Length: 176
Image 1 (spheres, rainbow, N blue to C red):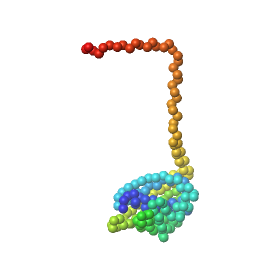
Image 2 (cartoon, rainbow, N blue to C red):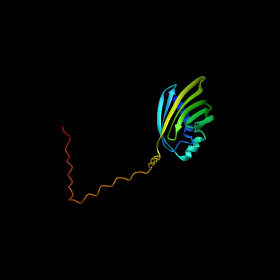
Image 3 (cartoon, helix red, strand yellow):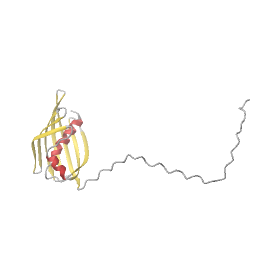
Image 4 (cartoon, one colour):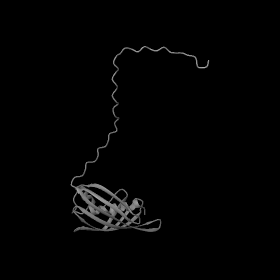
């Protein structure tokens, strides 16, 4: 299994941790680590609105994977997950995770297993997240596609005494 696939699975597993009723909406920062079979780390900041907390409680889902967790316990500061995710192409990944949370932080470690070209592949990933603010930053305004105005024209020259035209000097080429 390649690193992006495992990182995506980690992100899917982290979704339910955000869904715990005890977490607070706001601006969050999370560090996702792929611990095996290869090492990879990424950090992201994201806004979690009150409406999104409920969405996360329903379970993670995105355009690449659909996940179900027959075992999903998020209570008393403890997270326990066991289930599977299936890609649109039918690739199935078993997921088992455990962690802890508070209203402003959570940690989660997940073991994943899949088959890739007939080989059993296992991996481990973790997420550490904390709330960094009550208010999310405003998204950057998109730049318009308008054409910038043309530069201002130079002012017209002031009238002056015309320079007399120089007569054309015709001389034969050298050596003739």
